[in-house]
Image (cartoon, rainbow, N blue to C red; front, side, top):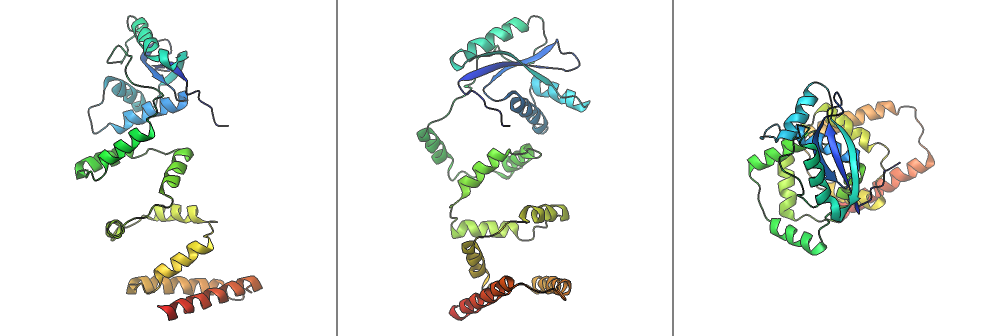
Length: 263
């Protein structure tokens, strides 16, 4: 069951070495579920290998190096308007007797802050047209390696892309970026498994059909299609097609030749 997080409340938490649970090494605040916040700490420590990590990240990385993950426990739950004071109070209380990795006295940040639509629009406008250098793109790619997006995150990405139309120039750039790119056998297998059982709508099939008409295929591509069709044909020897299947094949062929006559 999915955990429910109270966005009006903030948790003050402590990170510790599970081999020494009485010794706190970091104090923080979050409005997220504890497990999610802990996973973010671990991910950040692992993703900053190409940059100079802070004291907290180096400590977490030292645990991971020996097969140990840090523990997290909630110290106090407060209202959002009390979070900064509560965090400073806990850091001041613990730093006298614990080797905290906090670099400040706390009280920074804006937990639970949600920017308005107007603010998000201004941020988007400011970043539009911005070109990242190859070095920056490489760093972003390295930081995201191994990061697994949640089902909710993937759904948001999918919803954001629905109905989006790319310009001819953008489509050409995407096409050129994929040319000559070799996909590993493992990736092809994953794509195949992900697509099994997926049924395209009639509208999608029509668009795919129209997009492929008149598109020249390389000799290598044609040879692969022929080999695949031969293998498929041998596997269907002696197999009887249902009336529904035959009707679909007939309809598909008639639609194909009708489109060919129009082109």
